[in-house]
Length: 283
Ligand code: AMP
Image (tube, rainbow, N blue to C red; front, top):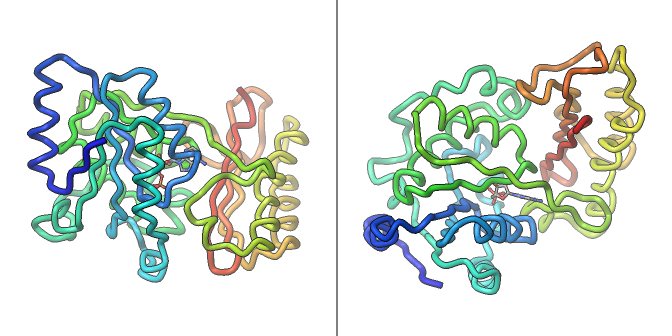
């Protein structure tokens, strides 16, 4: 595995593979890697000749500076995991390498309503920051495939909208959420939980499963109320949202016709750690 810190160096290196007609898969991460991230590396290796991962905690997607400061950093362990997973190239840039002109946005990305719904509502500016970093990383890596996790369901939709809006040639591949045996969705932020909080946090996936099991055509409000109640009762100090939404545009669905594809999404905080999860309600 080869490590690059400079964008010009990694671009020059990748150029040679482009010339040879090799297919490149790219897995952007913020580090503190776990089996969910590694599943994306495996997905990339299955359909590409070269797999590139990046580790970069992007300051522009954090609306809360405390969250940015507390974000776990475990570079040596990350490199070990990537090497063991057969990742070919790692990009580990500093902030000024990604944003040589400063972090202030130079473009406003047209991603539609997605920007203001759910995560967009509770994390103002978050998705513009995600677009800013993904755009810059795609420009440097120029992969054939971009592999992202459906754990961040809305982020996948935003990145698809970004690729479409900019007319980029990259193919977005999304991979299923990896979970602990308890059902808890794997997340770098889980490292900040005590074992009791980790146990309590299993309520998120349980509440989503409950919605899936109890969903009937008709009003969805009661299912949402029950989920919020269960999450609070488990010890979460705040529940930003539980939403039963159209799987294609994330608009809330208050009255289900029994046909529309749905997804349930949740964001809630325990011990000051904000967790998200989601579950498709129909295949
Ligand atoms: P992050 O490092 O949290 O920015 O995540 C980097 C990539 O890994 C994103 O595409 C995430 O959606 C994906 N990811 C994070 N957690 C999981 C998980 N539990 N299962 C699958 N993919 C994940």
